[in-house]
Length: 523
Ligand code: 5AD
Ligand code: SF4
Image (cartoon, rainbow, N blue to C red; front, side):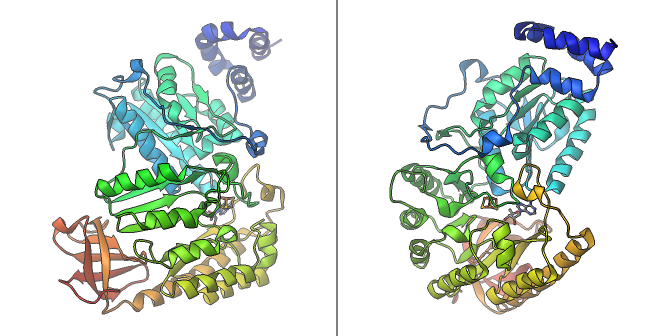
C-alpha cells in the first residue's frame, strides 16, 4: 500500500466527528501527497454536493414566504473596520443578488471597497450561462491565489450560478483549495452563518442546495445608485430550453406575492427612485405558481398606478406573453415602450429542438399583436447561432426573421454546450469557423437595423432620464429614453436624477448625441 492508498483508507475508515477534528492535519498531508480524486473523495464525506438531477425535480409543494430574516447576534458587528468586495458576472439577477449580499454584509458592519488589496472578504458572484463566462471566473480565481498568499486572513468566496454546478464545485475542491467559501443561489440568506464558519473554522465551507428554498422577503439591500432599482418579481425557471443551464442553477419558478412587490415599488417611489426594472428569468410566467388568478398583466396594471416615472421588465418568454399583458402595456404611462423578447432562432425546426414551445409563425403573430397595441415600441431580442445541426438555411431563417421584425438591438451568442443540459448530449457539430461567420453576418444585420432606427431620432427632442456621467467622458451626462436608447449630452450635473428634454444632434449605431433644451415637443 503506498502513501496515497494508506491515507485514502484512513479517511474512509473515519467517523465524521473524527474527520472534523483531524481535518487540518490531514488536509496538509493530503495536499502534499495525494491525487485530485482522493481530495474529492475526502471532501465528499463532509459536504453536500449540488446535484443536477435533484435540481431538475420540480415539486408541487408550496413555497413558503418568510419575513423574519435576522443577522445572528454574534455576527452583528463582526465586520466593523473591515471591507468587502463583490465581483459580479452575468445578468441583472446576479447584479441584484449582489445588492442583497452587500446589504447583509453592511448590516454586519462591513464597508464596501473597490480595491482588492484592502478587502477582507472577496466574493465572486458567478455566471454559468456560457463557457466563456466560466473561464473568466476561473481566470480570476487563479489571480486571487497570490492575494490569499499575501494575506492569509482574506476570505475568498465563490457564489452564484457556477456554484450550483457539481463539476465547478469539484474543480474548486480539487484545484483551488485556497478558496474559503462556496455557496449557491438558493441560500444567500445564510451568508452570516456561512461567513462565521469560514472565519472561525479552518476548512473550506461548501453549502450549495440542489433544491431551491423558500422566499425570504425582508433581506437587506444595498442598492447601486438612487435613480434606478431592480425589483425581483419571481425566481427560477421551469421552461427547460434544451441549451440552458438556468433551470438547474436557479431552481423552479417561485413568484413573490403581489402585495410584497407592490409595497417594495411604493417604497422605492417614496425614496425618489425614477425607474424600476421588474426582474425574473421568465417574467411572463409570473403568478402561475400562486394559488390565484393573477399574472404579470395584473401586476403591471397595479404598478402602472404607482407614482414612479418609469417601469421596465425583463426577461420575457414569447410563449407566456399573453393578451392581458399586451392590453395593460398599451396603456403606456410609466410602462415603457420597449420590449425585450428573446427569439433565439428564426427556424421553427431549431426552435422545436431548443424546446422553446413556439414556432416562427407564432412569434411573428405575437410581434404583430404587440405592434398593433404599441405602435412605437422598440423590440430587442436574444439569438443563439450554431445550435447543434443548425443548417445554413435555418440560419438564414433567423436573418429574415430579424429583418421582418425589425429588431433595433440584439444580444447575439454562439451556442455553448452546458454540461447537464439536454443539448449538451447532442453533437456540437457546427464548426467553430461557421459559427463565427454566422455570428458576424447576424451582427451586421442587427447593427444596420440599430443604426437605421437611431438615425430617425436626428433633430428630434426626446425625454432622457439622466443617470450620471458618461462612461467615456465625465464632462458629458448619459441616460436612456423611454424606448431605451442611450443618449450622451451636455448639461449641468445638477440634472442627474431628473428626466429632461434633449435635442438629438447626431445618431450613432448604439447611442445618440444631443443637447439639453428648455422644453419642446418630445417623442
Ligand atoms: N449557449 C449560448 N447562448 C446561451 N444563452 C443561454 N444559454 C446559452 C448557451 N448554452 C443565451 C440565450 C439567453 C441569453 C441570456 O443567453 O440567448 O436568452
Ligand atoms: Fe433559460 Fe429558457 Fe428559462 Fe430563459 S426561458 S432562463 S433561456 S430555460
